[in-house]
Image (tube, rainbow, N blue to C red):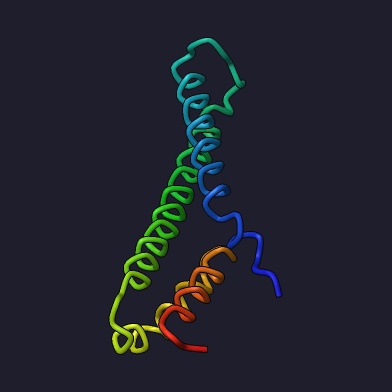
Length: 115
């Protein structure tokens, strides 16, 4: 079963939200300050939506990057005993990451001699 679109393309979607939010924020600021364009009073709303998209995109991107960092840290473990103890946490982390991390975990499990 494939993973949801928000998991497979989460990082790309987060970056897109950040870029769109930044553009909307800049457009909103330019409208409020009457620089180069006039949205007819919609500049405030554009800026507000831009700020919200920026916040959501940044939080989403940071959470994905933290999961990737956590995965790398757990996979670098050399001790089989410590790896087996952290396997539940590692599998949960992989479940929340794109499919390529499934194959990396499978490779590490084979390397450690696990099924």
